[in-house]
Amino acid sequence: MTQGAAPDPSYDVVIIGGAMLGASCAWWLSENPDFSGSVLVIERDPSYAFTSTARTNSCIRQQFSAEINIRISQFGADFIKRFRDFMGNDPRVPQPVLQSFGYMYLADTPAFAATLAAAQRTQAALGAGTRHMQPEEIAAAYPFYNLDGILAGNHNTVDEGYFDGNTLFDWWKRKARENGVTFITDEVTGMERNAGRVEAVRLASGGRIACGTVVNATGPRAARTANMLGVDLPVEPRKRYTFIFDAARPLDRDLPLTIDPSGVHVRTEGKYYLAGCPPDADPAVDFDDFNMDHGIWEEKVWPVIAHRIPQFEAIKLINAWAGHYAYNTLDQNAIVGPHPEIANFLFVNGFSGHGFQQSPAMGRGISEWIAYGAYRTLDLSVFSYERVASGTAFAETAVI
Image (cartoon, rainbow, N blue to C red; front, top):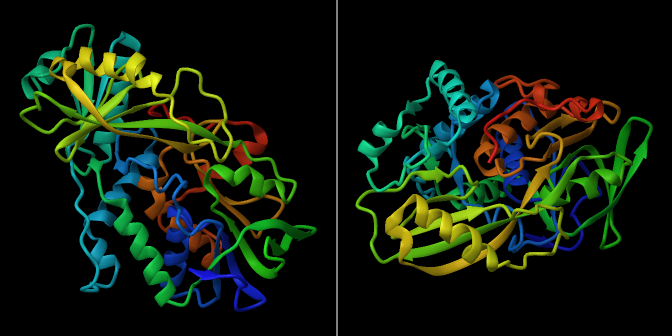
């Protein structure tokens, strides 16, 4: 990434934020045959060490309740499986593996069991491999679970699990550069607006970049970026915890990403296991607050997974970290597309933990909007800012 000032004083598209979603937008634009403009990506921290991208668990699932979210993930799975094709069959590009161990949602109330059954019907109608399972079926497939109190579960082992998202991220950046996208290390400190358009961004280095379109891809900092234009955005950093552990008695088969009714989740991670959860008290945190609360492991995570999987009573914690969700406080779903009054200011924000898996479709959608003024593949208009302005939440029951 180039340090210091941008080579040119003006760009057709300025993308603020160069992590997973910003890189996806840049690559898709650079590959769009109907877009020939100049693209600048501005990233404040080229190490990406404290981005949501760097601290993700890199999962993908089709187990959503809304059709559009299911289709977004189906495209994401296809993109991962055909990544080298999308990269022009470049022999330098590795082929990521999608580990399809699936998600296992467990329900402990009749209402939640009914919600899972309804979601499964929607998913199956769209071609997903989700099964709605009774406790005896779950026990037959995964006999290590303690299913006391569990009434039903949903599980899908087709194109659902986890993948090496860093491969996508690295090659999006590399290919975008090779296609002419400029990346610089700097920080946007303000934007100049004239009526219904952004005219320029101002940089911490003192530079000023005129622009045709601005894309807000600043993750947990998205509200701060929008505020530079006087725009309110209901996105804030929320802390999420991840733990890697070894088991004295490993399971005899891969563990699906199991979502306990308590909110704790756990899955296979190579020869180890990965677990995580939100804190019980879940406030917004400072952008730079990545301090661990080690009590969560002892008081919440370990007791839950040892109860649900008795073989995990004897385990050893190997590693732990905290990351940030770009949490949409309205409805925990993406905010995508143009501002209704500032037509050249585009959002790709508020993914609330879904950003990695949704990044292929979202980057493609943003590139379509910039090139054509409309979505041409998946219609992402349900994620528009208009629902934020009206306070109308997008309905999605499967939020983790």
